Length: 125
Image (cartoon, rainbow, N blue to C red; front, side):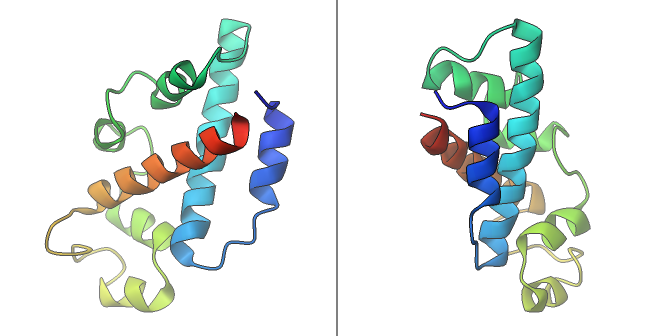
């Protein structure tokens, strides 16, 4: 497994073009910070990918429960601002409207968190 600084440097070096990808990278950096706190508490790094994912989830059983449990952003406007391009942000009235007919903003955040965790896992191992 790569070190914290190597992972952070690789994430910060990404040249994301879309608002979604930039938002996922921000979530990945936040998850990396939380992972670092857990590693310091445990006194070691995660042994494998499964333990890494468990530590990232921070006690939640899924990214949906992580999102709905308030472990990340909780306001629709904040989530929309992080993940939407300006036109989509305006179309959803700064997060007041649902992002689509099938999801709430917390569901969208759960998808972004899942992608951020996958991105971290690919870089770390």
